[in-house]
Image (cartoon, rainbow, N blue to C red):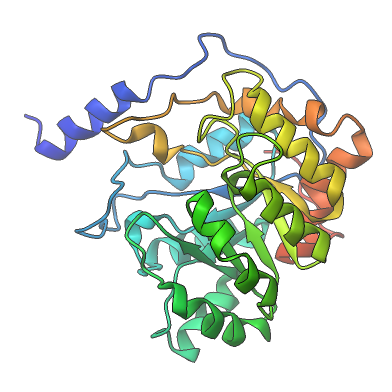
Length: 307
């Protein structure tokens, strides 16, 4: 017999059909210590929030280690998904399982205690994610107070929001007392857009970082090149190569929406965009290894080899 959860999960898996029929291989030498700076974990031991917009099929640490073997990455940053709201129990469990090769970005609001922040920091958390459009667990007027509380811990604010909201919050983000990193190219689908210009301003200020991730999201072109998103990624890398990091966005929760899902991308093909964005081996090393070490506090003297 199948319960409703099993049936729904199976249906979502069918919706999330990969956009690639082949099984590509990584097209370049992935360096030791390469970091996937944006992925999620969905563990059935931890309940989704009742009002969660996204309730994707489960994707565990064991599943993720399989992805690491395919990609050749050996470090990772688990980002608290909207499905868990401000309950970071799964995040803490992931950090305990994955050890010093992992870091995390949590979701907390203004009610978080100093003790909770210290616990999260000790476990390997290094930032707070501000996300609008999927439940909004953190209000816009909480961003500055949170930033002031975490600045002394060496943490950052990570943003994921509709493009027009990112542009509207530009002045606030530039004024925060801690670094800011923008998810998924700032949802830019090409150069010359308002959201692209906002991310460029953050980068040029020396205050902002960007994740050159999520090229398959938001309509920045089609697989395998994602031409518009790729132009945005190359523009950011040319602007501030020392403040760009890469992420897989695995397991691609937006590709499991029942309504209007994006096509499930192939993870290897997404990583294979990197040589086009950063043709030089030293530049790829900076984006995949050195920048994550600086931003998330990995030890440069302990670069793990690929799994």
